[in-house]
Amino acid sequence: MTPQSRRFVITASCLAAAIHTSITAGSVHVESPGRPVTTYSIVARDAKTGHMGVAVQSHWFSVGPIVPWARAGVGAVATQSFVRIDYGPEGLALMESGVPAPDALAKLLATDEGREVRQVAMIDSAGRVASHTGARCIQAAGNQMGPGYSVQANLMIDVGVVPAMAKAYETTQGDLAERMLAALQAAQNAGGDIRGKQSAAILIVKGDKTPTPWKDVVMELRVEDHPEPIVELKSLVHIWRAYEHMNAGDLAVEHDDMPGAMKHYAAAEEMFPDMAEFVFWHAATLVQNNRLEEALPLFGRAFRLEPGWYLLVPRLPASDLLPDDPETIRRILAAGPAGR
Image 1 (tube, rainbow, N blue to C red):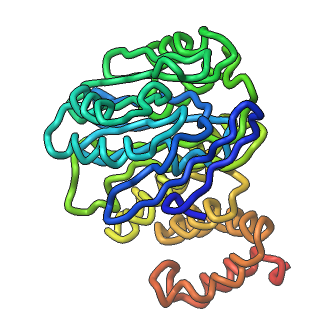
Image 2: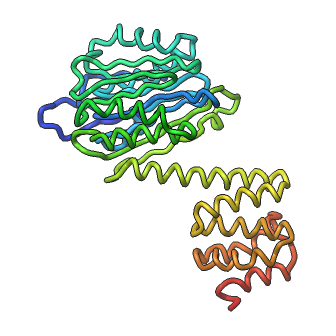
Image 3: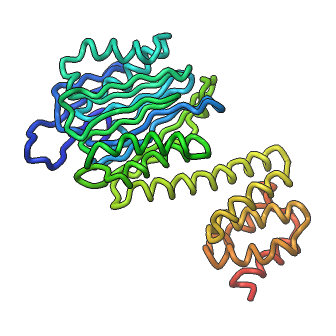
């Protein structure tokens, strides 16, 4: 099931409607107000990098395709409560046309008869923030804006959730992901959603649009259904950081920068010492730097963690990823199970 055609259902006996959405020709139409995506979220812009993003946690299956929207060089949107998805793509379209976030939100609210059950926040590439919590959002509900961010929540355990999020974002050191995750954790620590936890997501884009849009998304991670979605999301972010080192290492290999590749592969391996892939490529890069003796124990560890890497070794010289030297290959394979 995709965001283009989805029936959203949650268990809340006091509500009987459901949301139906359909996306056609690049626009979204919401046929009827429905049950709320009971959520706490943050939209924010990092003043140093220009990166913009949304982080969200909800007692709702797969919140990632629903609440967070962002586009490089444009802005970010969180749309929740009795969610109208239109605010995401239409808000981004308005901001991309040059409309500041506060005016974009005001324009969309003015034409929405269901505005009093909506909760929406927007930030544009200049750091201008706008936020709205309708009077009929289920309590505790509220929002708080600060320099370059907005936090918002509905159907929370009490009114302390929103200020806890704001304080955490403002006082946490680190990049945009770290600060937004801190805001989510603070919300949960303050009581969070009155019904519990289920899914979470984080979406971060670059401050400037490039001709290669597939490079404009910095981070996009989702936890669809988990008893501890924020903990799991933090874990995914940690893994993402390790794989960023791997990607940088691969790029260094492409440019024949073996010392740079080795630095990044070693950093990834240090973060996840039992990840066979990290260990293997660290070892392979050592060999390419004429450090076979240091590499052999790492190859042995990689083979023990995942035997498939042993089978891969003879294939790599043809791709210039290991030396085309039979003795070197023999010694590497001798570190594996067949060599003992």
